[in-house]
Image 1 (cartoon, rainbow, N blue to C red):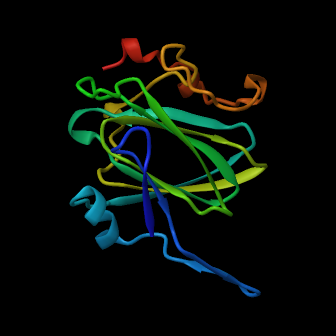
Image 2 (spheres, rainbow, N blue to C red):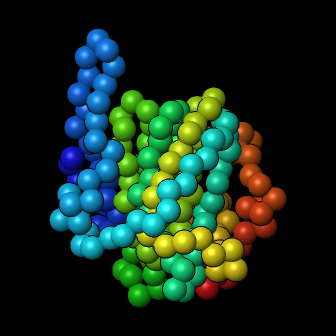
Image 3 (cartoon, rainbow, N blue to C red):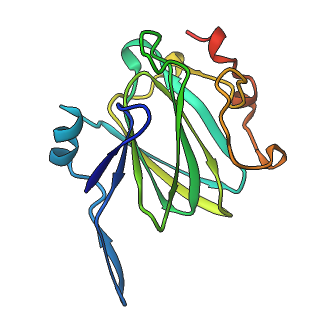
Length: 179
């Protein structure tokens, strides 16, 4: 596995070694020891999976306080634009974001530490998205940021008219109102 620093050094792109032949491919999708060499101790306690169609945007979500979560995200089939926004007020990267295309061909993964809001936009007709988290989900500690917050200025790389949001995500607020 290759670990690639992003413009926000705590967010890592993980590129697995893929072995392809006429039968298909093989790759390791997770190695605790290799990841811990890069980020220190981590204990993932829950795996999540979602299936979504073209234009679905999920996020930008995060968990507050002691329920904050680090995530290791990947695409099994399809493609997404995956986004992590730094919401650590003491960080020099506060309000900045990293955006990476994750898809079934490149097999890239994104490690997102605690203190980040996370979201993704589906770029293919159908996508299965999978992620590990290091803390259990707590509905009462869930929060989120409006996907098109002008102060963050995320370039979602699509015509906004194709974006499909849940009612919950439509009600999210700008970062300046959060926390």
